[in-house]
Image (cartoon, rainbow, N blue to C red; front, side, top):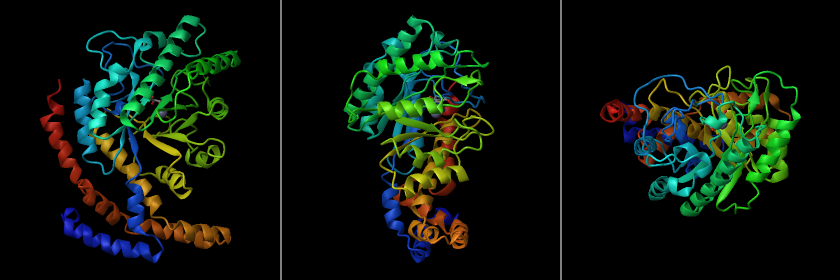
Length: 424
Ligand code: RNT
Ligand code: ZN
């Protein structure tokens, strides 16, 4: 296996660097920048979005996980071990993204309107020891009070108040996380509210949502500790005809309330890419969050792979100089394959896409476009697709002490044999 031999990887990198130099791209510079980009790894890939509340509420909210691959994390300790395994196979310094239902409740029944930072202290200590940033999400699903698919827009005042309190507490948890770790926690809010059939009244629920959000965000929290994001969606299972928190709703909300907008790659029409939205919304918003996902025919949350769409998203972030304004989080869940491998595959692909973008001869391409030389632009765009990108990526892994190429897979297989397969 030549490719995994360090000397060979270095030689190939030397040759590749020459190829990139020919088109004016400094590979070392690209790798330096790549190393500074954190990806937020979502906890919910590790256990099929179950969480650690030990209730048997249905997942609901239109979220659907398929598959029964053995070895899902059943406890916070198991999940942290799985995260560590995944992170050992991914180059760079990254972040961990928790949902509120992943707290440590020690067998106690702590309802969503009672969660506080103490329930996340072990996660915080663990992240701190490993120099990981952390992000957070209130959980507005998998709960008896969300059983009819309505939360912050519910017609019942008591239910709405309950979820508002949850949202308030989650921002406080976010602030505690940001304070402890010295990097702001990004707290992202998504609710499932909507309806299967076309409602008669589309207005009142949206008025309620705006009011509920204003109540949640009432308390000022320093952006050094916590950043708030809101996540729109086009439709979900059970909310096919109407989603209260639609794209237009949250775009307006984010702009007027100075919140981050979260663009989820699976939340639009199947032919609509969030890549094109980035430069549009960043005209009006200082920062955004991405939920990088992969919908196959619908918002199916497949594992992220190196598609044209992923490359387009990374390209928009990198070539427009948005690395400081776009937060990258992953959002998918697949229970038909090894879940730790799913994290590794998706995160490595996200990093590959960013590297491909960093290796683009953007000055030349923009000059061609400015000169309206679309022939050369198309020709060059196609030619650079076959530059020796793989050699640069391999070298990046080698230098970071991370398995090169598919060499990470035996590690996962060993972990599956020794750890995952022993989970009942
Ligand atoms: C659902 C949203 C949301 C969830 C997570 C679990 O459509 O994408 O981000 O996937 O909060
Ligand atoms: Zn999402």
